Each structure stands twice: as structure tokens, then as C-alpha cells.
Amino acid sequence: MKIDSTPSYHYHNVFIKPQFSEVLSRKDVDISQKLWGKKVRVPIVSANMDTVTDGAFAVYTTHAGALAALHRFMSVEDNIKEYLLVKQHHKTKECFCSIGTNLEEMERFKKLYEVGARWFIIDIAHGASQNVMLMLKRLQDFSKVSGQGKDFKVVVGNFANPRTVHYFLDSDFSKFVDGYKIGVGPGAVCTTKNVTGVTVPQFTAVVECVKTIRDFDSIDGFNRVIIADGGVREIGDIAKAIGAGADLVMVGKLFAECSDSVAGREAFATGHAPVYRGMASAAAMIDFKGKVSCTPEGKETTVECSKTVADFVKNVEGGLQSSFSYCNKRTFKGFCGNVEFGVRYSE
Image (cartoon, rainbow, N blue to C red; front, side, top):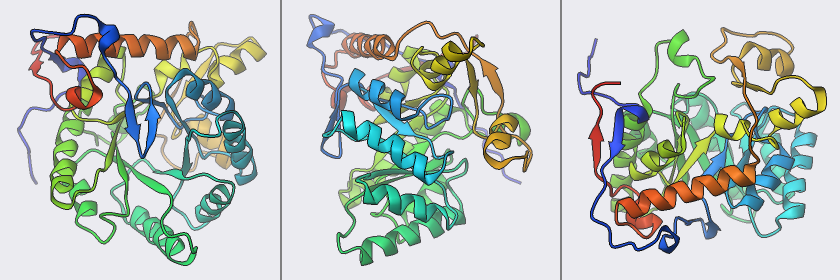
């Protein structure tokens, strides 16, 4: 048995300390981020969940200046339609497509690749697993025989322990993996921490995994993308994640609360309350597998959809600009991983 007695923190346990600022107006702050040559005006991405992001919502989110991640809980044919809908409206922009790890998921990858998809997330709850290694081997083999080389990006998730990230960084896939998604159990509708006892408070997970990844970046010159996934309850948490070193922040519940999310549109069509659910919830398993195939690690809840995604992204942009200005930072690069945090010991 090992016990790490080092304190660990959620976003609400920490705060960003203000600094003397020479920024005259938050309008002088540029929070945009470049991701593999593509400019992202607001560095957030809508979660790859079925009550949040479909093709239509990806169109709205991308138009608002953020990024979107399509979920994989649909047929390959529907997945292609959803992706092509995004590309029809945003030819020069990209969205993430999610894939699983079993052999059949290679068919999903190949079909999406054939129609132009190039940003992929290997999307499973526990990224630090042999199943992910096997999927990476299949993708690596594909890149060798495709004749195109590796002309696509691969993000692997989810991780929370820097030792498990190190295992991948020190493997044969070190430079094959372009990014890591950090977060095990912090989401509002994720019950992994309750059902299994397994989690790491999200702020600490981001800080520790960022350090491990950036140490490798400094050695091999590879610039791996870090996505902080989950645990965001308010806009300030997004600033904390970026201040901790994340390149992007994946958001679920706050996007689900948009009237143009899947949850919002379905509620408008049916007259029922908007439903937001984890992809490991019993309801999600019944819808996509026909039964509850294992102990659920997610739950279903209702949300209030009181804003459009355009309004939400605009508010995030303003909040981040203010946060940057409080810290005397004018750019994303200046702010990311370069702020002073304090710890809140009482609630």
C-alpha cells in the first residue's frame, strides 16, 4: 500500500492572485490559441457527450469562436453525416472526432479519415490502459501503409496520474500521440469517484500532468497539446485550468446549459426539461448498448438552458480577458502556466 500525503486540490480550492497590471483595457488582451496551425479564438472545446455536441452544435460552437468534439455514440454512417455537416459550414476549421479502442472502432476512424477528418480523440474513461496502446498501434500501422504518413492528430484520454502519462511519453508512441486529455472523475455527471473511489482532484491532476508532459517537450522539442477535461463549474475555473498549464479546456455542463446544445434543442422539441448525462450512465448504456452492461459510472440530471452558445462563448472570452489583465498578461502564452495561485483552506 502507498499513501501520497501531498495535498490535492479541486478548482474551488485555489484562486489566482492578482498582480500589478500594465494592461490598460481587457480589450488589449488576446486569449486566442493556435492549435496545430489553426487559430482558436476562445480556448474551450465542447465535450464529446451525446447531450452536448452533435454536428449542429459543433457548427454553432465553431462559429462562436470555440472548438467542438463530436461524440462517438452513434453509427459510423451518422458520425460521417455529423462531421460533414460541420465541414459544410466551416471548410477551413476543424473539429475533434472521437473513437474508441476496440477493433471495430478502426472502421470508424478510417471512414471519418476518408471524408477529411484529421483531429481524433481516443475517448475512454481510463486512457492509461493496454487497450489504448493497442489502438495506437493500429493507428500507427495505418499511417505507415496509407501512403500519406501521419497527417492526422491523436489526443489520448483520460489521464489523472502523471506516472501513467510518463508511461506513454516513454513508450514507442511518444511522438505519435499529439495530445493528452486530463481528468478522471471530476465531471458533474461522472460518478467514477463515487462508485470506484478512483480520482484525482482536477486542479492537481492538471498541474502534475502538465509538468510531466512539458518536461518531455523540453527534451524532444515536441509540443504536445494538453486538454483539461471536467470539473468546470464556472468561467473562473477555465482561467484556473489555463493558468495551471492547459492548452484547452473541455466543458460539458456549461455547454449543455446552452439552448442550442443537444439537450436544449431536444427539450424545446419535446417540452420536457433538458437532460444532461454522463456517457457511462445507465440511461446512456441502454440507449447505445440496449442494456446496462456494467456498473454505471455516470448519472443523468436536468439543467436549465438559459443562454445561447454564442452568448456563453462571448462571456468566457470576456472572463478570460479580465483574468489575463488582472495578472498583467496580454497573451495566451504569457498566461498559460505562468500565474500565481493561492490555496483556500476553508469553504
